Image (cartoon, rainbow, N blue to C red):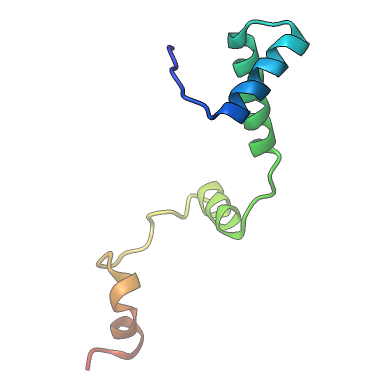
Length: 83
């Protein structure tokens, strides 16, 4: 993959400094940065929404309810009947 990016002066300097200190090609530096970012994302705590979605998927409960598909819009009609 070819990536072309424009950095502001401070980030460009920091990237060049990192490249000089590690004595590695820019490609390897970017690969390391991307890998670290992905690893940090996988270590993030699970949100409540993610937890609920995971549980529903594990128990194969997604898409098993019948209805018109607009429950978020017209739920009151289903709970209390239409006016």
